[in-house]
Image (cartoon, rainbow, N blue to C red; front, side):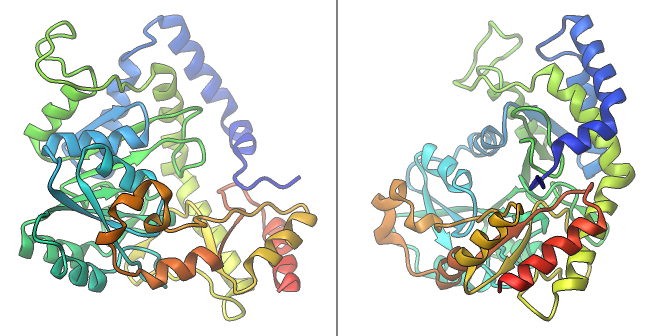
Length: 370
C-alpha cells in the first residue's frame, strides 16, 4: 500500500549510514548529550545560517523554551495563526500568556499580515502585545519581510515556528533564521525527521541562547546540580542526533531537490484543474505537505482511501474553535479563511522518494474522484 510519507523507503536508501551511526552511538555509551548532539547543533546552525542551535526533546519544548527565554507570562498577548497545529498556541497558554488568533492567507496558508494589523488594533487594553508566532506552514516560509516591518513598528518579537519549514527559504535566507528566535521539530514525518521526538531552537542572540541551554536542563547553572532557575528536562537523545546527522546530509545532497521535483510533477497534472499550492516568487518550500483545496473534500478522501491512496486533513478545526481555548473565545474575532480551509484542505502523499508513476496514479484518481 502507498505510504503518505514513506519513511521505510528513506531508511532503505540510507540504511548503511544510519545503521553505522546507531552502532557507533550505542558503542560509545554516551546516550545523553553525547558528542553527536553538539556536532549536530553546529551542523544545523551552519546550514541555517545562525550563531546558535540548541537541540531539545521535541518541537513543542522548542517553542516553550523560546517563550521562557523571553519571560512571557500573564497579561501578555501573543499573535498566533488560527490555522496551524495546536502546539503553536498551546505553548503560549502554558506560559500563562494569551493567544490571539489571526486569520491566514488563502493562497499561502500562512499568517495574514493584514489581519494581524486588525487584530493588533482591536486588542483589549488589559493585554500587552509582546510577540508573533509565525508558522512556516506545510514547508513554506511566512511573509517575513512584511512581518518584520510590522514587528519593528510595534516593538514585537517574532518566534518563527518552522516545525514544518526546515529547508525552506526566501531568496538566499533559510527557514529557522527569520525569527528573533526560531524553532523546528524532528518528528519523524517532518522534512528533517528522526526516529522519535526531537526539536531545536535557533537564534543569533547570545543571552537568549545561554538561557535556553540552561532551561533545557532543569535550569542548570555551572553544572546540572547547580540549579539557578526553574527549567525543563528537554535534551535530544544521542541516538536521535546520530540519525539526524545522516539524514541532514541526505537532505542537503538531494532530498530537498527531490521533494520540490515531486511537487512540480503534482503541479503539472493538477494545476488549473483544482486549487493547488502556490509558492510566491523568490520563495522555496520544503514541502512538509502538498495540500490542495477541494469543495467536496471528505467525499474525495473516501474515494482515495478505497484506491489505497492515503491522504490527511491538516487541519480539521481552527485554533479558535478548540475546546481548550474556549476561555479566551471572547477575545477572538472571526477568521473566515481558517474556517473555510479547515473544511476544504486535503494533503496528498508527499516525500522525496516518490516515483513519477505514483504521482500520476494519485493525480488521476484524485481528478476522477472530483
